[in-house]
Picture (tube, each protein chain N blue to C red):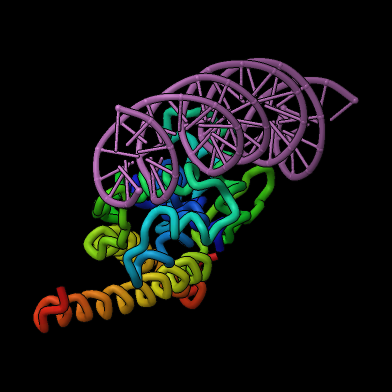
Amino acid sequence: MDTALRAIAEPRRRDILRLILSRELAAGEIAAHFDVTRPAISQHLAVLKAAGLVVERRQGTRRFYRGRPEGLAELRAFLEEFWDEHLWLLKRAAEAEERRLRDGDA
Amino acid sequence: MDTALRAIAEPRRRDILRLILSRELAAGEIAAHFDVTRPAISQHLAVLKAAGLVVERRQGTRRFYRGRPEGLAELRAFLEEFWDEHLWLLKRAAEAEERRLRDGDA
DNA sequence: TCCTTTCGTAAGCGTCAACTAACGCGAAGC
DNA sequence: GCTTCGCGTTAGTTGACGCTTACGAAAGGA
């Protein structure tokens, strides 16, 4: 899960993900969209794949990549939990402070 | 926004954030919860502050830190947009493929 | 069999990031 | 004024990361 978060933290990988979530694309086609070399994209794809955010399909010498909805959903669930937990605590803290100010503690 | 995402990508900073979202804590008290040196925590706090995820309050020689709900909300909104955009595209792609299989393309 | 296409992998380089150790700084307390 | 407490800040080091160049593997056609 931590792997997925770090994978997403990289802007270029987010761009790649945006590219191959709507449609399946070959590695070379993906690389053509960026101004870095093909191996660099290949390494990014490996990271995304290891994070479970992308799946690979081989056909002949070509490898097609596509976003994996389940991976994205898992990452989303993890963050939702983070938000929920924290926002709830923040709300409680804000309410407590409001009470403190209103009732005149200090 | 990218700053906030990178800030969150670090596990230690997530732990710090968990610690000071429910309650306000001094830098030293925060550092006491971890097995790294105090300066390291201080640097993490600076990163979180720069990302708008934390606010600082000085009182005498001590500095208290607390989570900033707005920063968290902004980051959340950014990711929500990411999910929505992508899940919508994924849904469309899945439906298209289903049609392709059902109607017998290949 | 040889060559081409399509791609991953290995090695190396520059840079960034997390950490420690040492120092500096402002606010009390004596 | 001097010391102590509580921090941040500054080198400096180490490891991770993104990138490029060079090479190798696998599939397919002439």
